[in-house]
Image 1 (cartoon, each protein chain N blue to C red):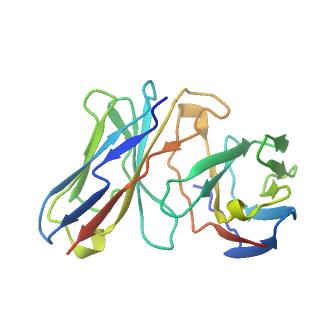
Image 2: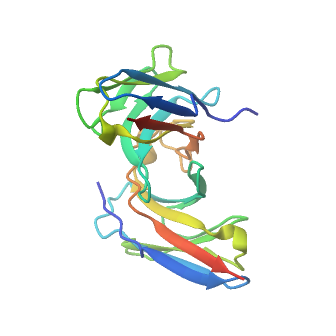
Length: 118
Length: 112
């Protein structure tokens, strides 16, 4: 079956511009995560959705970052007034999200979007 | 959130067993321990998860002592293709998900 997909695979933008990154999770997965990863570092948690609502957005670095998941499936990460420090690979993951389950939180990752801010 | 500590890097040779230990002294009662593997230019991939004692699947084994303050990922007979970064995470999946903190991981380099 189809895995998690992310578009675009690469995005180059100029400082100050607005960008949107899209994530299509595995069908039926209620939990969706966004991370960003800089070279040589582990993925940094940004936000986690359970259904349509953000269950934990404590990883968003500032108010320039915002994410939505209006219908509980596709999610969009939005970055306003991009800065050079936002350059990174943005990863999306989804999981079944069933409560109380051993192993239910296995996350399936997409290939990522490489964002470069010039 | 429980913090994890792992070695930064490890070297091994093909055919050897590799054990990567992770410390999580502040693990909470409801936390599970999960390990992921990441190859360059790819997203992490789930390897194994456990709560206590030993868990084994077709890829690896996970050993967790009674106090659960550490865990050891065991990769039997590694090959060159096991060269990757390995992450240890702890969290409570009881609500269907959790804020996932990856840390820097352990870079395993397998040599011929």
